[in-house]
Length: 546
Picture (cartoon, one colour):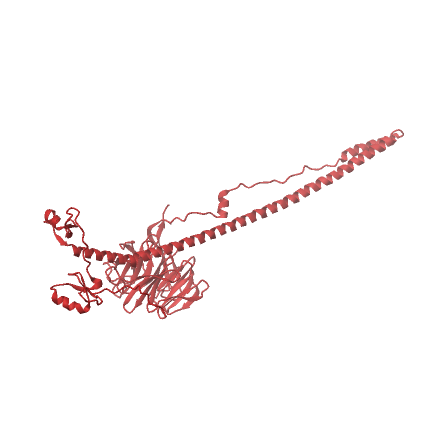
């Protein structure tokens, strides 16, 4: 059995004489702790006293002497000068100014400090903790990536060395063959020349041994033989050495072959004219959400609650049957190329790896998951969750550990009515389409409300669905409001502060009932409409000179 330590804090006692009961209440007028039994008696004895719960009490003003009048306590607050003063200071210098009760000001300021401290504990410190964790993850990832670069460069250097060794071996082999051929010719010439010399020496020796008795006819024949012999000198052409043409060492070409390290500077873009560049055909109509999978694939959810992976020609590569809601952005692709999708019936987020194996990733308990987004900035996962009438966005790290809930503003008001699509801007802002409230809601990374956008007066209705952001921090959202009387189908382009820049696609340009919206790795805009078997691709950004 675990023993209870005797160092436990004693409860707060009632200040009423001879009463030691637990003090649940507090008199702000008397600055006295009061228990439930003494409460009524205190009210009966004291007129117009303010009784509150103990944790809602006003703190008694701590005695503080005036620096000018050392015998006087500071007990007045000058509203005009916004300074605490003593009664004598007020009489002498502030008598025409408005004054307030210093104790009230003290407690209001104390309450504000407590509120700010609570906010720091609730948002700032968790955000700092998240940033530290994210920074540690970035540090480890950078180390891993740099190690990969070094391995790749060593591998390429070994390949180049191997290629150079192979070239050297081949050239040495060619030199050996040419050298052997030339030397063999020289050896043959030497043999022929030595035989010729021996022939001449023998002929001269024969002549000298017979010259004393040689007859004229023999002398004439010998003279003829000598004359012919001098014409039989073996000949050989000058050996032709091979030509060695050393290539000029070109560092630029070698660097290109080897590979070059460059700092990754952001690409510069500017808004340009909108141009439709292509259409992607899909076999199941009605893409409600699109998730690009670079470099040449994408996922789409249809109105049959299936997730389908396509190539750029519209061929189905994989298909997953799910119980997803078909009007939400309920799937996303991570920076590692894995698919995440939400199942509202099973209250589960599933992960689909590159080999198409599906595993449970996050259990959301009593909350129903809907829209989901994987951050390319830090790998965090943002999920829209619903429970009865409550709505929130919850942040998880890439391992699936809960980091943050975003549900209310600083006044306690609910931020969301129904989160059906989520994205993240380059400044860390979280942008959500709320079709039930018919507006876009944007909060900071720490969950503080920034602004909302409810469409333009030129369009009678605004029903936001697909939402995404681009490399310049623009927010793009499609208006899917369309009736028999008016077509408001369009794509709105906002700046990062929620100001409308233009209708990027007007009702005349936009596919009807637009639902799906995304930006690919080439910075092109993809738009898919309900019931359509095509996805339209538009170019609206132009690269600028760096």
